Image (tube, rainbow, N blue to C red):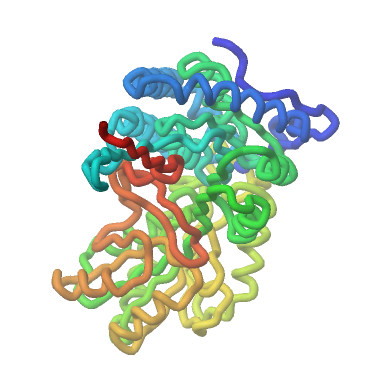
Length: 460
């Protein structure tokens, strides 16, 4: 195979990459500067003209070949993903195979006709709508799911006929470099370019002549992208702090599934449950059952470390400022891949909290569940909707009518009922409020990376 598709980089601005499992430096990588960014944009601009001109069938076949190449190199991708994230092998493998599924879905979607039907809408005229690609898309993805979040962005962008510059997070460039390498051989040179670097690199990319920016990350980062992007198209996915409403009659699997979802990827998931809200009469039982379930999920064996030292310090700081009356830990068992110096955090259950507690109003983004008591269902919904983010939520209980009524009342882009964190390429995902805007997944995501052109012809 050829070397990864990556523009020229500056050796003097090196980035130290750390293994989250051990805290030790694992690699040094040059950071991309302004010249490298300009080179990437120019390469993607040339590639876009060729890529967008392909018939949809050919574009689809190349995307399928790209997905096949990633799956063929599965072991290499697993090693790359684990190196930067510390994920257990089964988590990394599952996320790569899910990413392959996303790419294959968009290979099919590339051939779907989404335009309104042509028709006779004006006297003596025939009209139709063309959906055209935006051009060069900057996809800036975070460190929590390096390849999966990349697939969510590059899948629809490429299927729609755009070329993509993929800017991975500073700490997790490994799988992005592999994607660019394999894309060069299957899609064509420059169709997907990797641009590793730090936050300065990301700002240079947004400030460049790209036609659109798809950003997944923090609210602060999203606001910076929005300020820099001006009138260009942007899509923002900015975080969750998601509620889980546990109502009377919740099924027995509720507590194991909530704690498993809250600790998967060490809780570093925007859609993970974070704030458990239950009725006052069930509060003690819910706290006890969550505590018991969390006790079966020790860090180091059932889930991996936090991604970096800053994230661990942030997690510890939020918990140290919390006024929780009860604070339960899951335990820590370091396996052969880890070391005490790594960025490990135990799973936590925080109970007896004030409504404005830092662990409630802030997205902790770690293996933690807070538990709040509500006077009644209306109050539970009020608490659920009481933070700025509105990405996802879950509702647990019995009685289909009541559950669906609560799901409808919760302000979130995605709501699960008696399940959580279950997604597939066919179903859209996106936030509201401080969680951003735009759609990931489903055929609807294609419209994030296309623009309509109406063509009207005078009939002779």
